Length: 212
Image (cartoon, rainbow, N blue to C red; front, side, top):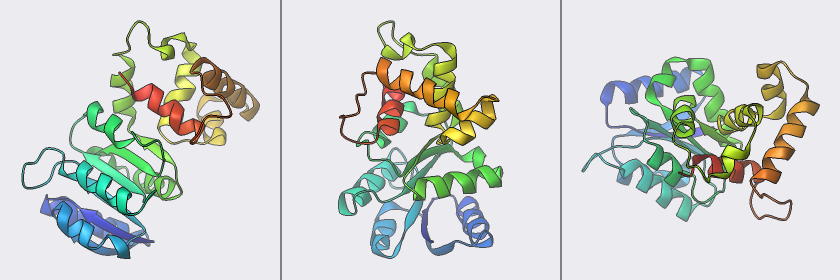
């Protein structure tokens, strides 16, 4: 898999490149800004981007990710951030198309989880950092449909937001896959996600989870 890295911190950028190459990825470019990333877009299968890059160090990475997906719909992007910025997380997932991830940079040190997240995003999944999920859950409005979920259903939805499939959720919660499927069906129903809804219902459920 051919990867482009866009990260302005030199040590982290080179560290990511070394890590990914050691895990069998083909890092075709490691750049420090969005423009250089977009210049290599057509050569890549996926990208790892920092949220904040030159020149303003605000949301250049998100803008570059959005432009990349405009040029190549569904292009897999894993965005890294130094802090929990749930607004950016929501913006990142706004198109509901999947193949997107949002992780805190500290997760890179957990190599197996980071590599797994990149693989899941590249396969079209949606991966959210557990800390982002935790903070979002503490900010729900009183009329938020997510509040209608049971504690177990919220737990399942949180794990869905982390990008886990049914088997992984079942293993994490020590329940059967049948039980997980039942919980997910209840989640879809309570969030009003009918089978006829456009887009992937798991992604739509995560979007509902992220909206404030």
